[in-house]
Amino acid sequence: MRALIIGVGQCGTKIADLFALVDFEALAINTSKSDLEYLKHIPEERRILVGESLTGGKGVNANPVLGREAIKRDLPLVMKKISSMVGYSDVDIFFLTFGFGGGTGAGGAPVLAEALKEEYPDSLVVAIGALPLKEEGIRPTINAAITIDKLSKVVDSIIAIDNNKLKESAEDISKAYEKINYTIVERIASLLALIDVPGEQTLDASDLKFVLNAFGSFATVGYAKAEANKVKNLSRLILKSFENEGLYLEANIESALYGLVAIHGPPELLKAKDIFEALEYLTRKIKGKQIFRGFYPDPREKEIEVVTLLSGIYESKSIEDIVVTAKKYAHAFMKAKEEAETKKKELLTGLPDFDDIYPGEVDERLG
Ligand SMILES: Nc1nc2c(ncn2[C@@H]2O[C@H](COP(=O)(O)OP(=O)(O)OP(=O)(O)O)[C@@H](O)[C@H]2O)c(=O)[nH]1
Image (cartoon, rainbow, N blue to C red; front, side, top):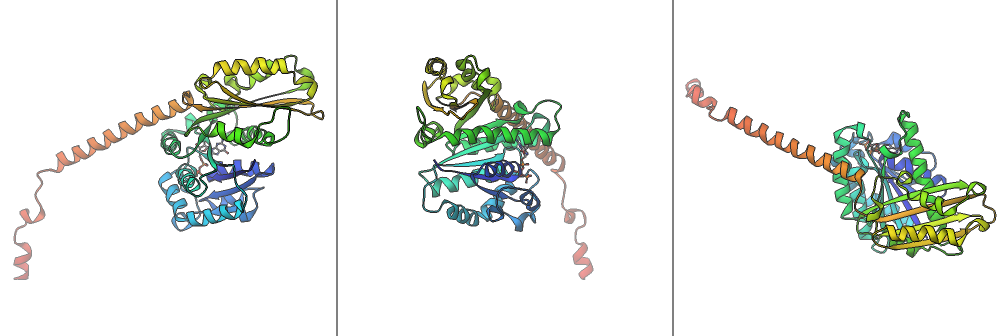
């Protein structure tokens, strides 16, 4: 299983940097020079500043039109770098990480996704994007809604992370982001690390690709971990991993098409009866009724870890809230703009030109 992580914009490159820390191949793309310099784990030759001629290396200030243009201008450079990283072996999945509410990531991710799909038709392109906090205001909400629409037509799945859901109240925002980013990487890296690893039942790259090949719908990742000696009922721990409070976004998991569950822990505790009980429950619950599973007994392990991926989701309150708010605002804005234009026309119609009021002035002076 080979995954390549491409971070776009500040949020995206911070997340990609954490993936690099746990040994994933990662690339960072940004319009802000200082944000690129701030990264710790992605080597310098894998950091690309785009759109410098447009932005002077200072970011795009939440303007996705500039973000889109910046990536477009330097797309050949970006694709050349990706090609040199890919080399001669296939990439199963390109993961694009970014924040939905800014300018570089929101504007750039769809452009890059399209280019990757064209260049690497056998690889999946999966978006991993953070949804804006409600208190950030209308602009990030609009950026997010439009980017969701664009990506849903290009990528295979969108793993949307609702910052509102993961941020604990009264927390300092940069600390909250740090924690959220850690959670994202912990879950996805744990899952990817188990793919193709021999287990009692093994998940391979084609299982993961099947589950994520979901025509641009939403996916979410659940997680539960506990010290092995404290787990009295494994079935309950598995169920906890896909309970709403453990997921990345508010979503109706019953609307999911596919599920994938990976369980890792000491062999004596991975009891088949408990596992099947929980998986049967999940199979009944989701619409598509297709669950892939992997059990990984590991005698060195002192904890039990469960990672759950649900995909093909169309019912999500987190997404609906953003789209509905953005649509409402966009309609009100377009209406206000139209009214302003009409009012301006009404007010100014009927005025004469200078020549009507000062006839012949120039001719007189010229004699
Ligand atoms: N989870 C998470 N979300 C973040 C983080 N940083 C920013 N965000 C979210 O991402 C959005 C802003 O995206 P950024 O990545 O900062 O913006 P950008 O893509 O670099 O674009 P510009 O700053 O406009 O050039 C906001 O809606 C934030 O809520 C982060 O580290 N983690």
